[in-house]
Image 1 (cartoon, helix red, strand yellow):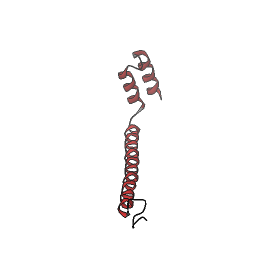
Image 2 (image 1 turned 30 degrees about the vertical axis):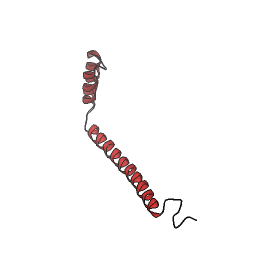
Image 3 (image 1 turned 90 degrees about the vertical axis):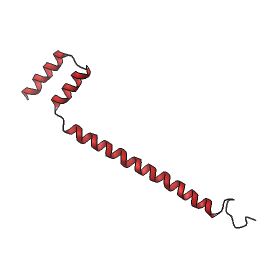
Image 4 (image 1 turned 180 degrees about the vertical axis):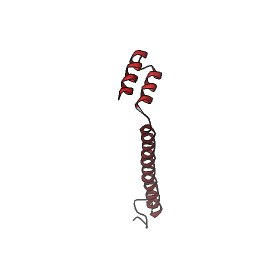
Length: 79
């Protein structure tokens, strides 16, 4: 009745299915590893910064005004 074919596609369809799903899994693994390495690179770069560097960045972005900048800067130097 099936004439040597399974599910109407034959063995080549089984091979293509395995190739397709293997590629999908490999892509997911690659993306997870790449995302993890980017995250560790960013953490490594940020650990080199000192608190004064963060303060300068906040001031440059306009998140804090000059008075607050000077106050926190004095406080950091006291420590």
